[in-house]
Every structure is written in C-alpha cells, then in structure tokens.
Image 1 (cartoon, rainbow, N blue to C red):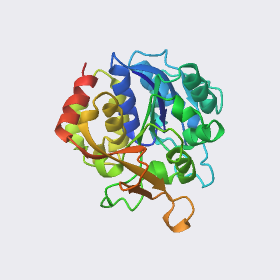
Image 2: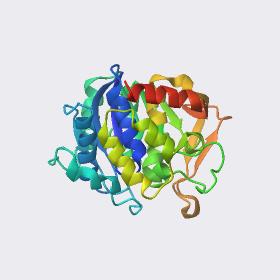
Image 3: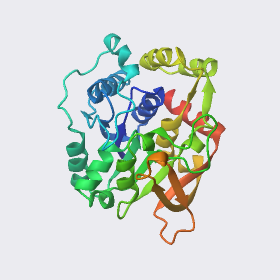
Image 4: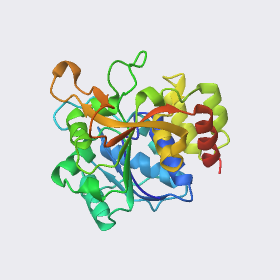
Amino acid sequence: MAILLDTDIGTNIDDALALAYLLKRPDCELVGITTVSGEAERRAMLADAVCRACGRPDIPVHPGREEPTILPQFQPVAEQASILPAWPHETTFARNAAIAFLGDAIRSRPGELTLLSIGPLTNVGVLFAVDPEIPSLLKAHVMMGGLYGGPVAGRGPTERNIANDPHAAEVVFDARDTRLTCVGLDVTMRCSLAEATCRQRLSTVSVGLLNALADVWFAEHAEITFHDALAAAVLFEPSLCTYTRGRVRVEADNVGSLGRTQFDTASNAQPHAVATDVHVARFFEHFFSILEG
C-alpha cells in the first residue's frame, strides 16, 4: 500500500508509534511524510529520526504549515523533539514544502496513493482548496480526527485535530469525490494502556527511540492512548473497527462551537465512513505484532 503521512508528530507520542508501525510493515510503501503545526521543521526532524531509528533514512520528509488557516496556534511547540540531540536526524529542510510535495505526489500516481492524516488538517485543507481535483485522485483518505459518538469524559465537545483548524477541516469534509474514513476520539479513547504495560510492551520492540519518547511522555502522563496508531492500523486491517456511513460537517462559523463535528447518518449523500467501534484486544495484538517484527 502506497501511503502519504501528514502528521503533527512531536506533541503526542502516538504519532511516532503510528509512524513506526508503518515503517515496520513490509507491505507499506511510505511515499513521504509531511508535518504540520507549530515548529513544523522540528517535527520534520523528529519524523526523520524515527525513520532512521527504524532503518529507513530514505523516506522523504517535508515540513508544512505552522499556523492554522484563521485561528491562532494552540500547539506552538513540539515537546517531544527534546530528544533530538541524542538521535541522528536530518537538520536541513525546505520551509513549507509539504503542500507542493503532496500535490505533486498525488498527481504523479492518480488512484494509487492513500493519504493518512493524523494531525490538524491545515496542509490537507489548503491543498484541497487550491487543487479541488486532488481528493478524486486519491485511492483513499483516512484521518484520525473528530468526535462522532457523543462526548468523551474530560475531553470537552471537540477533538483537537479538527478544533485546531476547523476551517481547513471544513474544506476537507466538503471535498468533492472524497474517499474519506474518519477514526474519531470517541473510538480511539478505548485504546489506552497504562504506563507499566506500555513500557513492558515497548521493551520488546527494537526501536530505542520509542522508549526515549516514552520517557518524555510519561513524565507528565500516566498512560498512552493509541489514537493515531489505530488510524494507521485500519489502513491494513479495516476489520479492527466497525463503520457507519453518513455525512460529516464541522462547525467553522459559530465562535462558541468551533471544531464540533456533526455526523448525519440520514443524509441522502453519505460520502464519509466513520468508525463506530473498535476491537481493542485485537488491535493491540496486531499493533505490537508488527512493531515486534
């Protein structure tokens, strides 16, 4: 499977776990990685470091947009990039090259590439806005983003990837000829492991950089939720989740509810597939079997 990955790696450890999963799959052709959100170049350095730690220094990495389309930036810093001094990585990147790279790659291989979005949708929304034909040229588009099955305790009414740039998300959800599958927060929150279990499982994975990232993460958190890793896994094992078709809309006008997603299963047009449940034990068995080789 030929994949383009758009990520805000560096804020949450799950982006790096999703990337390592893709790199460890022999049936995954990772065509390139683009980064989004604050400190996009440091995020690109971290993505490159993960690639090198997995023995894949050949993967193209391109930093993208750092600021949301309209709103201020809510995640200006890539905290997990603090590990970079200890790990080999590329240090020089062309600034803001992501959107052109994505467009050129998709147009060069129409109908072949799957886009995996696991960060705010700024890069993707801008690309779809300037080149509306792009969605129809993708084989598929899978995103970790949105909240579709009701509120999640302690998380509020929105999901961060959508809420960080709802105006870009609106462009993505409204795209013509879309082939979009959404894995939302209400489903991914079920895929959490406590620190002791995570450390035990990661100790069996021959990618030391992931343990370094875990040290950073567990300094302030008691568990890892595998949001982006689940979205990556369903690319190859879609039966890990169950889905419902309908129409997703995002609130991009009302200041009091910016970023809220509404999922209409009664819509005459049903262009979007939304994950509604996940087989948690099967997911973890599958995910770590790939990372452990």
